[in-house]
Image 1 (cartoon, helix red, strand yellow):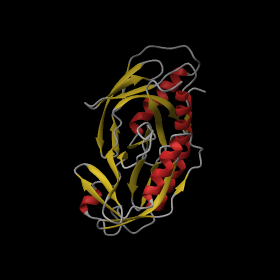
Image 2 (tube, helix red, strand yellow):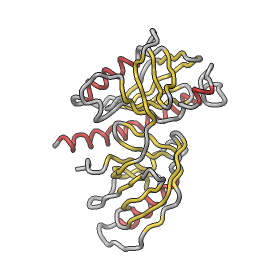
Image 3 (cartoon, helix red, strand yellow):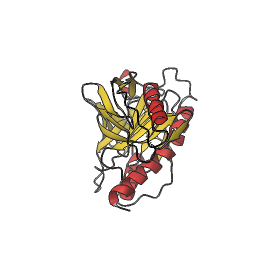
Image 4 (cartoon, rainbow, N blue to C red):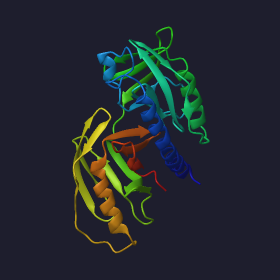
Length: 273
């Protein structure tokens, strides 16, 4: 297996495992008495980072962190995301500018170097978190001395992606062999790509971690092979407007419906074997 194939396989395994932890985060977060979905003592400033998918941009002096940066999303009283390899979820208590992160639950996928070193360093840093602050548009987590530990920027779907799984009815399936489904999220709010046979185009809007995708329009070519390609295309195009929020974890993009079920998952274009 080549390095690129290994990275894609790892992304696919992590995406499948992350569904459980995202659901766990949602259930745990709904158990509190915070009607607005933020922790006790939350400030108006905190509300600006809750629900935003954050991507780590500094704080780990580990080789390889740029290829698969860890992530974090704060939902209710839970934080979850990717270590750069596995997905994690942990309870979080925020009171003013104080932040405490509890015991971390994580998937158990074996991480090849350098992802294993990135994961260890990230989880070690998480154990030292004692506070937080906003620095412009960046989220900064602090240690007990008030020093910067981890710095995040808001993740974005902007870029060229290739689908690794799509919603087909009540199931999630990989694209049919011999077909490629793509998505290009442009800075100007347009979304375009191939649905496996025809080209499609639509528009999207973002609000933090929320996304709204308009019903797409597609060309009208009929493809006879492989068998089922037109049904797959119809399912994909119908599913896209169901997306209400997104995550960018371990270099992969996930579109999620309101109930946290997957609409589609993608890896960067050109990385799929």
